Image (cartoon, rainbow, N blue to C red; front, top):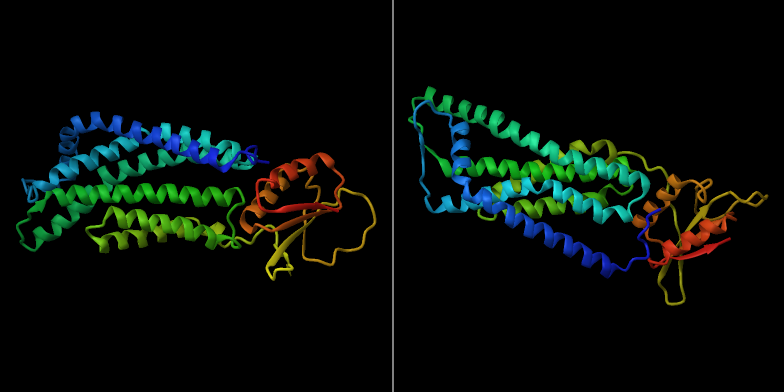
Length: 331
């Protein structure tokens, strides 16, 4: 089970702001050397992206050049601090993760930056140059004299890289959640609402001057994330969750989750209430992790554990649930 269930929310919030502040400060500091040398970097990139055999690139928007320099420096600074970001995310999330989640999370924060760097290299130095060359060849075949705006050329390229960052990290969240059992068909919409909402907001804010481009990139990003996470969004849940619902004296609905452990060896009549059978939950850590996920997504008002005589587990479970609104009963 997670180890930080009794830590106050304020402590978590303060820690999160402190770590984010460190990352932002480091991002700014690391971006400065990139800004000093950004002209050489952009010149090299322009040479790689230039589709023409003779000069055909022009600077039609000089005022945008400074903006492009800052943006490119920020992206390079972001790529530079990825190892620190992974370390900070791991340190913050580790205490609250279950054992299986820790293994998957560690793999994700290592693989996601590597996949991003590989995808960025393939995009900037192989895919986009070929795409621009094909487009230039088509214009040349029609007899047009090609003149391209270098700002639009690089802006388009950086936009693609930014979309890749969002897609890779969002897909990592969905796939990791699926592999750890946190994502299935029963809560897929819960994940979609949050992940796709953040993706859409980031891309619309990034392309606020061109809303159509932002919407198009958001739709493409969501489609890619949905395709790659499809095996888990359609997966049947491990447990069919049914909760008992009753009205209290004030007319409010009270939800109760009944869990059958079964470690108590005695003949008992069947439980005539909606319930979940979680055999040996008091000794099996993997099943305990399943229970934590059930509580996180369903948030029952009352939790009743039936047929369990493991007092150590009961005390540990009571301590865990004490940080939520749920009340626990043991029968």
